[in-house]
Length: 87
Image (cartoon, rainbow, N blue to C red; front, side, top):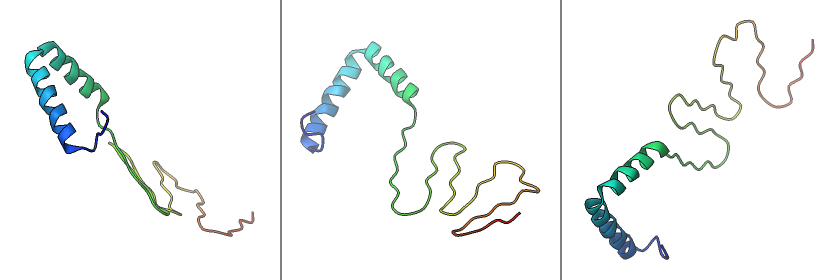
């Protein structure tokens, strides 16, 4: 598409696509299968520090944060800048 942002072009494309889908049931079923296979598409934009979590089971932890997906009993977790651990 030469000008995808042009609403007139979008309308013409949508019209012709709908015509094709009505006339060709094989094309319709192939397109449905393809869309199902692709699934959900995520997009994100992050500015500065922070976190983004997308999708089922996703977890986000912000800057300096710690995520523990299980048992951390008895563990030492140190966050921050300039820390010195003496043992």
